[in-house]
Every structure is written in structure tokens, then in C-alpha cells.
Image 1: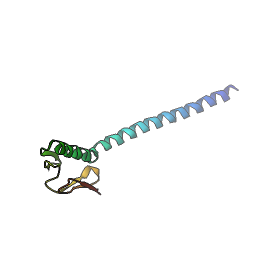
Image 2: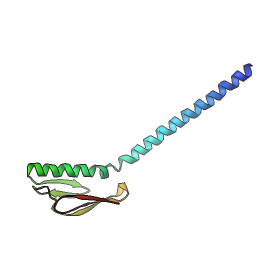
Image 3: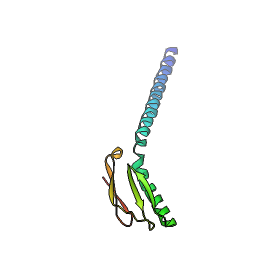
Image 4: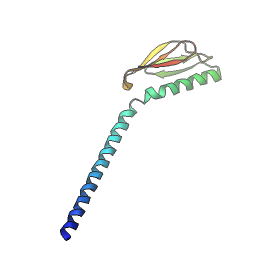
Length: 110
């Protein structure tokens, strides 16, 4: 009877060890994924920064400008973009954002 009790207790430790190893692997995978995801935040934050700068231009009536990828994006007092362009984000899989002339609208493309 005592041998059966010992065997049951060691089987439980094997399960516990496996759960600990899986927990460590999950934490490492989550950390690695979050570090990789941080590099592509520019692509996801760009539309918000663009709309914020455009809104400031529209409210104040004063031309505004912002920098993105060594390119200046200028808005006139009516919040229109003065130069159409395409911005490519290599860290986000070469996705592109096209800035349209005049109204300042943008289109996301892959």
C-alpha cells in the first residue's frame, strides 16, 4: 500500500513540472512576441498622428507640419495636404499609406 501511495505522489510531480515548463515557455513566447510587435507600432500610430495634426491645422487655421520617415507632411490652414505622397513602412511588411492631395485623406494599402 505504501508503494502505491509513493507512485501516485511522483506522478503528480511530473504533471506539476510539466505545467511549470509550459508556463515558462508561454511567458518567453509572450515576451518575444511583444518585443517584435513593438517595432511595427509606427504604422499603426501614423493615422492617429496624421488626424491630430490635421485637426490642429483646421481648428487654428494655421498651417501645420509633421515628420514621418524623413518626409515632411504639411497641412494648409484648411487642413489640406499640399503634396501627395506614398509612405512605405518596411517594419510592417512593406505596407503603404497613400496621402491624397487636397482633402488630406489617406488610404492604407498592402
